[in-house]
Structures are given as structure tokens and as C-alpha cells.
Length: 233
Image (tube, rainbow, N blue to C red; front, side, top):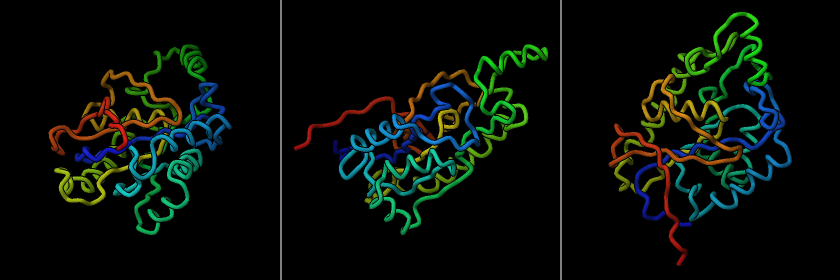
């Protein structure tokens, strides 16, 4: 699974594994809901296939790791990297736990299912909920989420710009471990779309997505929708 031909820096986005609230479809923001056994299996399986020396996510090529402070994200990071790689990155000060990539604050919608939110709003004469334009009652607005995501993206640009041509020979990839809604919001902002832009995305628990840049140009952030894996020699 070598990616020796890849030269443009990449940003890997990793969603934490399944939780009980993931299964039930409940909004999970600040609540600390642990991974299920299946969620642990999802992350371990992803790590075995995609993370390690010579694999898609090579810890030796990571310039930095950003993770949400929620336990389900921290546990996912631990399992993806493994103790040896994580300890090395921590010693080198390459792991940042940051609220900038924590899940959307759902406010009064925390723990509710979409149909419960819909029913509650209908009873109060409120229009159908659209998180991308309305945010969350008692929680975060779309503007507040955009502000913190743009701040994080600015940090990533600073890390990767010196290596954009792929010739520095230094670690240049970034790994982000977070949550389903915020990673979809991150994708919109990475692509320079407004939060209200109608861009439908799906990301399974334990999944990995890839962002990068077109034409080795930091001013052309892109989503890598597919890549090849040459046979090992």
C-alpha cells in the first residue's frame, strides 16, 4: 500500500467509531458516549488496513495530528496510531487536542433524534430544521462553527505550504480525528464552500476521507475522491 508517488500534502479526516447514539441516530455533541464493541472493531480494522509504515497514512509522514477532545475521538486516535507511533508524535509535539474540531454543539437538540427535533419545532410553529443555515437552538450557529473551522484550516495551510511541491522531503500530511457532522462541515470549508452550500456527504463511523490540493497549489484546496494502490514489490 505504498504511496511513494504521492507528493502533494494531504489531510486525512477520520471519524470515530460507532457509539450507541450513532446507531440510534441521536445528536451527539458534548455528551461522552463510548464506542461500542463494533465501533472498536471498525477503528481497528481501518487502522490495520490503512495506517502504518508504507500504508496510506504513514505516521512517519505526519506533520501534525489534530483531534477533538471528546473521548470517542481520543480513543479512536489511540487505536488508529497505536502506542508506539502516538508516543513518538507526542514527544515531537505533533498532536494537538483542540475544540476547533470538536463536534457541533447541538444545544437543546443534544441526545434527540431528527424526528424528535422535527416534531418539537412543528409544535412551536418553527420551520423545518436545517443545521447548515439555522445552527442549533441553545448551541452553536453555523457562523460560529465556520469561524473555528476556518481557524484550523489556516493552521493546516501554514503547516503544509512549505511542502506544497512535495520536494522538501519532510513530513507534510495531517491527520484529523473527529465526528460526523463537523467533518462534513470541515469538508465544505476546505473546499471554500459556504456552510449553506447544498453538498450532500456521507461518512461511516471509523471511516477515512482525504483532502489535498489541486496542481500543488495551496490556493486550490480539493477533495481526493479516489486513489490507486500499486502492488507491493
